[in-house]
Image (cartoon, rainbow, N blue to C red; front, side, top):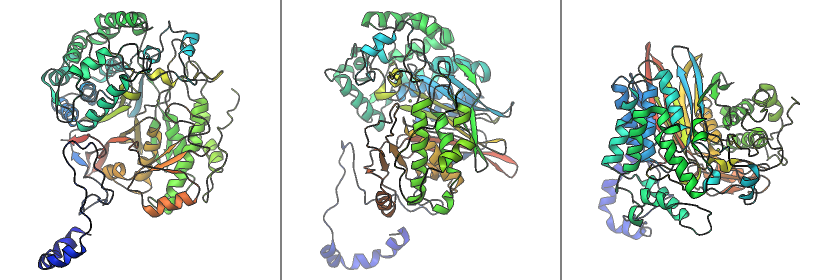
Amino acid sequence: MRRRTFLAALPAAAAAPAILRAQAPAPAPVWTPGDVRFDRPDVRGGDRPVGASFASRSAVYGLSGAAGSAQPLATQAGIEILKKGGSAVDAAIAINACLGFLEPTACGIGGDLYALLWDPKKGKVDALASSGRSPKGLSFETAQSRTKNGVLPAYGAVSVSVPGTVAGWWALHQRHGKLKWAELFEPAIAMAEGGVPVAPIIAHYIGRAMANFAKPGMGIEETENARKVWAPGGVVPQAGDPFRNPDLARTYRLIAAGGRDAYYNGPIADTIERYFKRIGGWMTRADLAAHQAEWIEPLQTTYRGVGVQAIGANTQGLATLQMLNILEHFDLKGAGFQSPLSIHLQAEAKRLAYEDRARYYADPQFAKVPFEWLGSKEYAAERAKLIRTDRLMSDVKPGQAPSRGDTTYFTCADKDGMMVSLIQSNFRGMGSGLVADGLGFMFQDRGQLFSFQPNHPNIYAPGKRPFQTIIPGFATKDGKPWLSFGVMGGDMQPQGQTQIIVNRTDYGLDAQAAGDSPRWHHEGSSESMGEDSGDEGPNGTLRLESGVPAATRQALADMGWKIGASDGGFGRYQCVERIERNGERVYAAASEMRADGAALAY
């Protein structure tokens, strides 16, 4: 019922209470404090006078700068850095440092970092990859001996690779920083020392992680330090509980004073080496000292005239471009928003791209990845011919190449036109469960994504970067920056990025509505890698958010799709859009309504 209709009916309803009581349904469920979840699928968002009816809010607009992150306090810190005269890079580093404290379930200085950046002086998109390698002292034979069903465990030292985040911050700041390095850590240090109430999503995932670390038989060498930091006294923080991390504050002070070397070739590196030696791990100071972030050329394609950029390296960024190249051969606008045909075509494009993802994606310094061929329009045209509009493809395989990887995302833009799209992660389950003595952050478990299949390009090797799921997104129009955006969440990331571009380009949704639109998530392929498991049956499982129309859901099932329940695994989105209005640049910032994030502009 529309709001104005409901209000007009009030006098009549008030005059007939007996009739209403006679027709009243059973009492509706009532939320009580402490409920983790309150499901009311019959209730939808309120009526909006403008824009998409399903949008949770409007985008926020500003002339001077904008930021969006997974935590409101982190976004606020980024805006304050911008107001002090900092660059978008300065703001991004400050936001990321805050998120390491505010959102430890997804990110931190024990993880890796990738960024796409619009450089207004160059007039182009640059890419930075700071993904760490496996320890040189961890042999293939030792790593393989720790596998179960061909996969490394999520927890413990065997899945830890060198963290790349701090080196990524340093490389970004050396090239584009305006404020002093130490200033960028002041907001995070103040939060970690003074305390901040824990957000609901974070409290939920800390509880899950601590429960996992306590399970017997998990192969965890050492989780006592993790419990000291995030469950002091054995008590896991609940939503709204004040929380502090003085160990992380001290670590940040060391980095603020000593720069990159404090982490990779100084007191923090010494502590890390002693810790791994004590627990029987393999990470050494030499492994840390050898790490360098690298500036690389981004991959790119066009989708209906829009430029779309992605990071290649050892990531799944190419999958977004492959999906869009395939979808360009179909009339998605004519198919209709949230229609069975539109979702069917998008999911089939995903199935094709992810077969190649599982077969070819790896560290290009160890394997010859056919980026140019996989990302070509010619190859996409061949693959598009395999898709039927009336039913599923029955036998999906990777293409034949010619012979020759939990995450946080945030974005910000400054008064000079620089836009930064940055993603950073500890990977699965908050990370490896390992926290070096007194440092206050957890090491990533990204090594779990290595393959142990003979001759696979992503096969484990000492000193090699594992396949990565984390990817920032960027889009341009007419050679100018348009969208700095990302969708977090393992194998959902290329699927989510594709849906954002389709929602903007084919369906004309604004920055906020494009993210609030109900999503689909396909799981499972005949070949699998990372979080896209191969145990979902021959055609995988297509999960649909509850907002997808019931008729669409039924039609997809009739086409042969195995429809899975909505499980909340549809990613989390942030975006800053650049708009030209009356000869002036305007930023529009949008944030995810599915979690704790916020976007601000000024």
